[in-house]
Image (cartoon, rainbow, N blue to C red; front, side, top):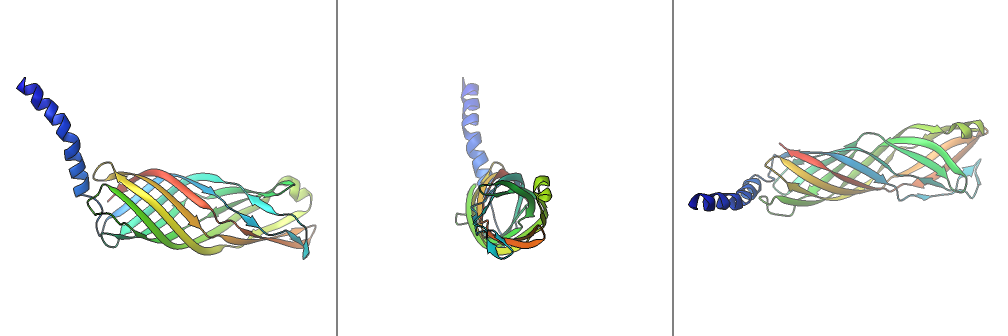
Length: 221
């Protein structure tokens, strides 16, 4: 009987010992955390009217969402402050001419750097954080659809963007090194799309301003 009681006690105590082990090795100055997971970009776009040869067409554009592989990192400057980086494989979006249909495809990379604040005790296995910083978005591979090329659309180019970025997230340490992560960012992304219609210079201003959601696993070094 005593052997059974000892076995049951061991099973009950083990999770507590694991929690103590994890919390005793939580975040502190000098730690580096790498996170990998699915990242979804959800544009909250606001488009100006498309201008063809300087004339207002009355048409606007929309941008669809996309999911790619996301990679984030944090380097702890102190027990409560860190430098964060958001990167990803290139996001691809369709640009739609509202009321008409799909206009073009584009790709972009949105590297974002933030200063992060972790408010809880450094020994806590749960580490929520908030951050603020700068986003740079580089657009490339801008291509009109084949049908629109045949209709006279050409030379599509989107200006790169600099803007404010905000983030919030939480890490939960499963072991001393392995963790779960959920994060969300807001990025101020404004661009001007320049192109030609039957050789006539045209443009449209678009505030993309997406939310970026990420869920993944991480590793603390």
